[in-house]
Length: 53
Image (cartoon, rainbow, N blue to C red; front, side, top):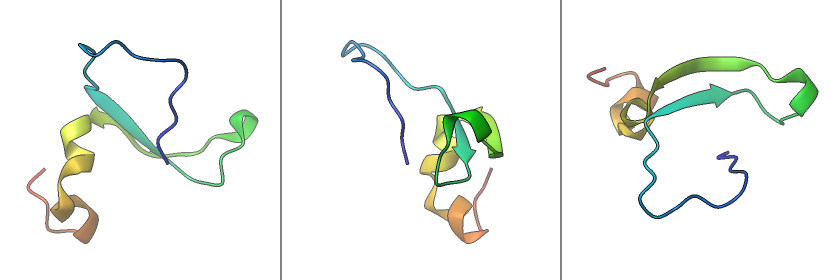
């Protein structure tokens, strides 16, 4: 789940991300990974255990 608050300008770039356990309760967030470079989560191999990073 990607949680965005507000609107980002078109020039904005996501450089880091966190993987959180769900369902999300804002008062009880549990981080599973991160913060890491956003590219880490975009690598399909990372989800299959074969990623390069």
